[in-house]
Image (cartoon, rainbow, N blue to C red; front, side, top):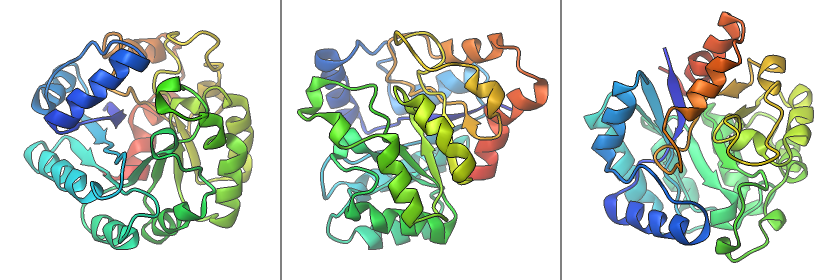
Length: 270
């Protein structure tokens, strides 16, 4: 089984806005297709399940995004739905409780987009909900990939030290950091022994796209703490580049299985 633990399935108008932002500030997205086409493409390529990660870029849109994601999951059983919330927005705890008490398997937070650090007090409700429901928070809080297009110095809102402080306050919360925490992968890796509920995903980090990327040997050192993920469809290259890079490492079969599906099944459920 192969589970892509990091996929973005947005409503068409929002997906188009995301593509325009990437065109101007990051890279040209190769896969400009709709939600159903995204699911079909991954399924045809041998992906058994995929974790849908919506994220709100402003207050007041989380419920609509969560409803949209729930509809996708109802239409496509291969989709594992996560919810989102804008930290500190009115009714944030109610939004989380409604979603996590239902079929949503985790929460997506993007520190750069939301301009909120992991240890910001506005995040406390989210960490508490994770601990209470035993469901992970997928939080982009590594400094990279970064862009001036965010209009901020992203290092003010990200970093291993800030996540460490959050997890010290909420030790029972479950966190997954995308991109192997690039470009502080060493610092995030050093946190793993002290924070058993901390995990990383491979998204865009092991296929050589970014110069000076993380040491891919981290997958050999911590196969029980790393999930395979892609960022599909918001990619500037073939959807399976990450998968091919992972398999080229020729990890022990049991370690490859954990990274490709076992860890995701344990954290998100079947």
